[in-house]
Image (tube, rainbow, N blue to C red):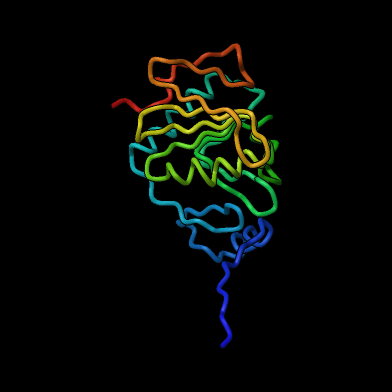
Length: 187
């Protein structure tokens, strides 16, 4: 008796972008391509959305004109991934990305509530593999900031957990210090 194998069909970034351009997906769908799999993102709670806006404002205040702080916009991460991180800090100006999504970032932040396991596992692996020097998870479940640094292969070597009373300085702006509390929505 023959045994059937069932595989998942994975997509390349090029195929995914073609589907988007052809209008295959509904315009209201929130999707992202991670390691060849198209994930439907859950609708955002107002708490999560406030977390994204709070992080965006805090990072805009310290990164200035040499960087573009991009909330929930596509980011190229290899041939099989085009995630939409909650916040990506990329070199240059928004006008630099008229013809293509950015492929480099100095910092990526995910605001995690229901997506915490996905952000710690798949997203962390994805960003480390892409060589993103610094990845933060604003953990709304445990109310802490997880700071991942030093990517090696598909994992980060360093992970530091910071609390509200702590402060953090991005690797690309070591002279700038942010209170961790300033990154979170008010409780």
